[in-house]
Image 1 (cartoon, rainbow, N blue to C red):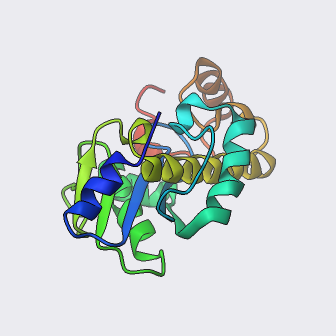
Image 2: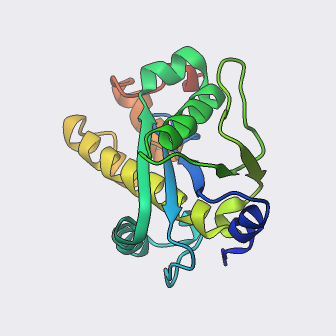
Length: 201
């Protein structure tokens, strides 16, 4: 379960304002990539918080509201599928995370970033930071950010399922499931499909 250990270590090194940052939607064939950034009040109690992938949709939705309510600041940013095709998914993930940090409305001293990559060929995390592999299961701030990103993206894909019916976006959220590939072959891609991800068609 995520805790405050990494945040407190950063505070001990002199950082006063620390955010967690994570992204959602790197792997899907369709839709935006999202990133969340969160500054939590030190010691904020968020019972049940965990890596967003370990939680049910109902649990994530409940935690989303609690995180927003208890955060000092929070932000969600995204990149559209067309830009993902243009700059590639790694650059898109990095750009979205830095954008989420930049739009917090509060200057961040230090960021805890989920994953093991902080730059691509065109974009980099420029905020002082620490990369944390599986950070959403270790840091409460990263876990909170992962939930904001995941819930925001899932809500968007449900909206897209109404705009582009027939693809099952409300179920698979754009991920490369067997059924998604079947529907793609039957219907062809729609405007929110990432063309650079459709090599298998």
